[in-house]
Length: 147
Figure (tube, helix red, strand yellow):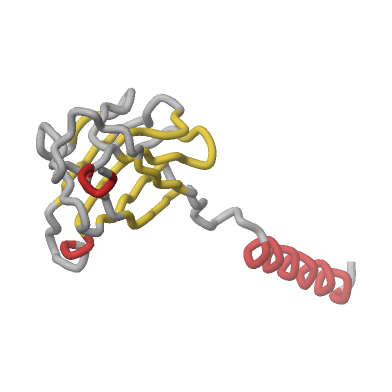
């Protein structure tokens, strides 16, 4: 072959690789979409207790990490974590979980029990499922606000 066909083949390969790298999601981190909801039914809760919080996910995920941190602590070098769960190979596929409840296949990474949330204070939930990540900010409501 002469020099011209090899040059055209090289240009086609470079353009193809550039297209795949630039316009495909192959190397991008997938996003986990999280829905936060509070359940106003807490019959035994004191007025200053937070309402139960449920986190819903957009699909079934094998979670490898769950972390809840107060937003005031996020900028610290070593933030105080209210709830921290990890799993080496991923949890059972889950579409949602309750704050502080056990998630099948995950164990506590820090303290044994999750910290009680303070109503009115803002928190951030970070979840991970291998290379996928999701983040949402939420504010718990007090049970007494509904009465």
